[in-house]
Amino acid sequence: MLRGFYNAAAGMLAQQRKQEILTNNMANANTPGYKADNASLRTFPTMLLQHMGETEMNGKKLPNNYPIGPAALSTGVYVQETTPNFLQGDMRETGIKTDMALLQGQVPLDPETGKPGGLFFRLNVNGEERFTRNGHFSVDAEGSLVTPEGYYVLGTDGNPITVRSDNFTVNKDGTVLDNGRVAGQIDVAYITNPNNLVKEGTGLFRLDGNGNAPSALGNPNITYNVQQGFVERSNVNTEQTMTEMLTAYRAFEANQKVLQAYDRTMEKASNEIGRIG
Image 1 (cartoon, rainbow, N blue to C red):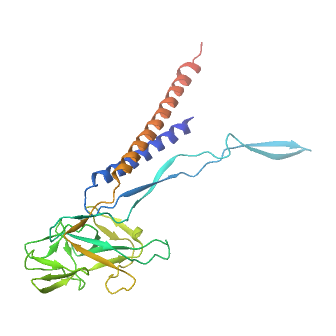
Image 2: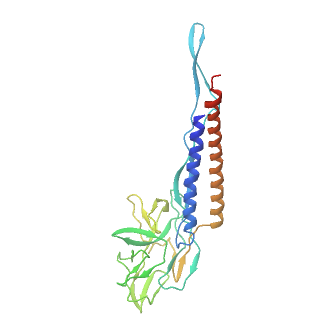
Image 3: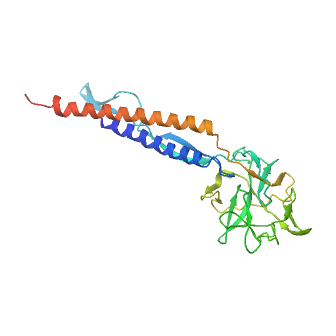
């Protein structure tokens, strides 16, 4: 019976964690470039219960084992991992010249996963390389193209893009023209397997492990467009997220009722069945 307590409690914790992930998705439904998180629920390893006994036959003791109850007992569930959904969001026109959306076209398939790779803006975050799909940029006091947090947008030469004013244009290939002068070309990083990216908040990703992110520029198998005056919207499906939140809440409630039923049963066992008249 105590095992039932643990199973119900594990179910409640898993649903609570899933609810937190879905709530975060809903809170970022209007965040440009945000990628929704998906929670994967897994069961703990099953457990086998057997009666260990002996049977005497012809003067010899032979093992006599047989299962108790079901052949296998579940020991609860847990949230195994959280993986972002890297599907491209819809494009929204803003008319702001510093806003840029990365429209992904043809991208090679990853030979390991069989899924297409991903394209991201390359950033300099305190001297370290990071990536983002949030193209809601601005121009700082030094004339550098930066994210809302002040991180530099890198060009293909590895340096920040610098312009003299916010009156500039960006070609489809990311070339920045400032009053007819080429100020640089926005670098677009190609990630073979986006699942190797780790979220770091504020729409940033870092590449896990020792891999590198080559530039998509010059790769004949990759096509993309940089759309000036647009931003990529979040890929959160609000209707589906609301439905999943209600489902997770009902599952949490069901496990809670099971836990309460076990508690009442234990109360009877300790206060009534075990009473000596």
